[in-house]
Each structure stands twice: as structure tokens, then as C-alpha cells.
Length: 254
Image 1 (tube, rainbow, N blue to C red):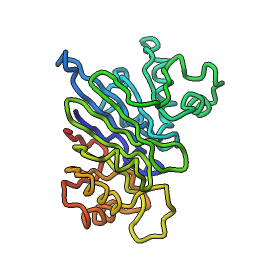
Image 2: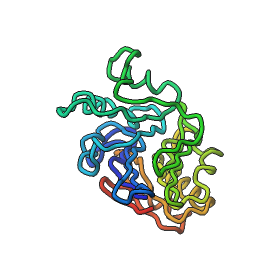
Image 3: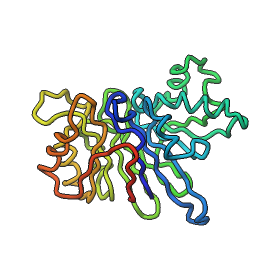
């Protein structure tokens, strides 16, 4: 299984990166010539760089952690891409998200709720683990002002855990426990007067990785007004595993 960072800027697109978007790839266990690709989030500005690293015609599914624009808005562009493709409309693909995902995306593009984008996407709401090709995707409720989920993706016996946006919560530890790689947001600075149940600091991200036995930690979702180096230093103070900062185009073998 491979993780490709498309966008990693926190809260909105920055000068060097789109907002949250990640491709996860895995070979079909019965057909080594076939590669499955899913997206974890599709935040503002992500459709452009996505086309450098993955074929938008060959996506097999989209999984939203939550429905804030920096995690879902560029599905609007993918809707246009698939609906008006010069080779003809592309087949529907599944899109999973929290309750109300279909209506939220229709509203984002100014469409009536019926049919909204349902001719292009098969919208589904989280109700437990999802099996898609070689992937098993398990949603874990996390702490955020809107319904939000961390996503635990397993394929070929390896596990990637993605926090989405979250403050500290029991669901976060369940999500991370025993994962091979934790892709974790780090939006707040340690020591600031940060609001609860919204985001993690770099230090909190490191502590989550340490206490759950995660050997690799990748920090992401740092807002453009903060320095990634500060988040890395805060995490490194409490975490002694392999630590990296997400950058667009970075690829990780999980």
C-alpha cells in the first residue's frame, strides 16, 4: 500500500500546497496488473495537483473525514470532470462521508438536492467498516465541531491511520493503536491557548503516536500561518519513532 500526499495545508490552501487530499494505492491481490486508488479527502485546490500523481479517470472511491471545505470542496471539480468528460460521462464511483454528505455536496455546487451529484457519485454514509477492492476502511468518530471521522485503511496486512481533523479523544487512540503509519494533523502550537475539541498540537500528535506504538508519524494539516518546523520540534520532543512532515508529492510505502 502506498500513500501519496496531494495537499497538506491546514484549514485552507497555502502558497505551497492545496488543502487536505491523499491518494492511497494498492495492487489487486488477484491481478497484479491492476492498481486500486482511493482518495482520503479532497480539499480546496486539490484537484489540480491530483492530476500530476493519479489519473482522475481511474479513481475507485473517495472517503471524506468530514465536510469542511478544506476536506471536501474539490469534489465539485471532480463532478464536472466526470460529468462532462470529452470521452463521455464517466461511471459513478462511491463517495463515503458523514451523514448528509450528498446534500452537502449538492449545495456546494448550487445544485438541487435531487439529483444533486448522484448521477456522478454513489454517496454513502458511514455505518461501519467499508470493503473496497483490497482496502478495508474503518471510520472512527473523533472530536471536531462537525461530525468527523479518522480513517483506518488496511490492505495487504498493513495499516495506515489518518486522523482527519480532531482534538484529543478516545476515538483517536483507537484509530492509531498499532498502525504502521499515522498521518496526523498538527494544526495548533504547543503552549498557545488553543480551543478544545478542534485540532491537535505537534506535541499531542507525537504523544498519540508514542502511546499507541506507531513506528512512523507524518505530520500534516499545518496552517500556512505556522511553521512546520515548530510542529516537528514539538512532536520530536515526545516521540522517538520515524518522524516526517507531509509535503505535496511525497510518497510513503506503508
